[in-house]
Picture (cartoon, helix red, strand yellow):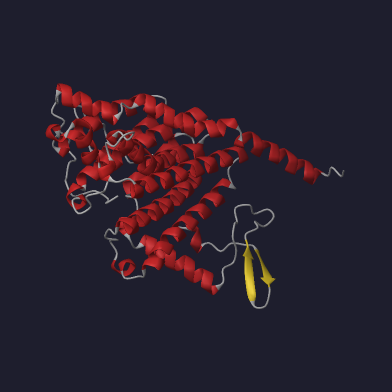
Length: 72
Length: 323
């Protein structure tokens, strides 16, 4: 088989691509989802806590303006 | 601006009698040149789609968001030009999904010319916006180091698939089915928010980071922060839009899911629901941002406070738009 410099360059490029496509890439998005799931309390848990304990601190924010959403 | 204005090199080939097929082969030595010289019809297509998108502010993300995205990418060592190119791609994607959502929900489009077009053409503009986004991404990834380009492409694919799944869920899930066996209302809603809007912002922040660096830990932290930001935006929009949602009794909303989960008699004012969630999510976001260098942390904090104001009980951080 003719191993010209052009073919060698292509082959090494393919190896780089294959390495990049492998497990670390696939793992990355799953890691993101898992990291967020670990960090953020479930809405259900927040709602239940509030229902049982009540609102302990008045959750006032300076950005509330009903009617200003994106409609999504 | 968008690559539509670019004149790109390439090859055309005659196919059959009178028809021409545009081949999208990059020319040797110009890997960034994806598609080619345009026929008058192709020019008309590009010009029209770009005009439709750019003249419709309601379909465009706020400039302040984009400034924070750029600040994030540059703070992680990225050069300005590729970061901006990624942001252009993301902006087209954002417009595509927002237009699609408005059409599917029969919402106001915010542009009289667009609203006057036929539904098939309106839907086609959504698809075309996505085509422009994808073209911009392809042009960008061909200039990045190969492994980085592939990672960015895969992040794009994974998150866009989430967007599609979230929109499917939004179109098929009914408020009256919340609380049915096997469907915990707030769990369903939370997952919908993560897919529909969280994934878009995971891509925005993760993509800017992924354009800038090969450090997967930093990219993951930025994407995780984006996922949280997007979920918050879905909750916030949803609560703000409650009045218009009264005409859509089967739409799955945060307030409806909350009421199903805790019981309607324990429902809270919407502002209180928002404040409680924002405070809890802010704490989680702050922990995730600790993995990022201070300028990147500041870029995302600035973005969040620009979107939602200072979190309850926290002192506002100084807002900066400089890089």
